[in-house]
Image (cartoon, rainbow, N blue to C red; front, side, top):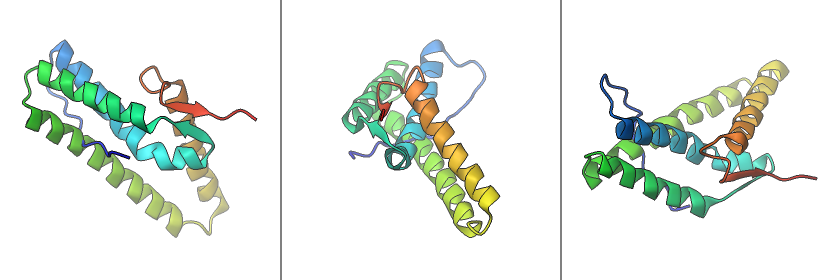
Length: 133
């Protein structure tokens, strides 16, 4: 998947517009990348190459705001890794709770909602398409 590197979304007082722009992109990229496989399982088509291109563009935006290439890559890696860790924990919790139909249903709703949000999101809709039929 040409996995994208990430960074914890950092929020600091006095962010410039460019910093806010790439930080928001990094957060959205992290959610998108960590959702690819599950969304595909739920019937969404994911433009993986497009996600890789978006990642490249977000890193360029970060560098244009003053980060070095290494810093831009590291921050993106941190965001993706943090989102993957949170999602892994969610999957582990769901696995432990699979005896509860209510909890399984809640987990399924969460993922359907996330994938639907990605398909409708202003930054992500170009990469997630729900198959009709």
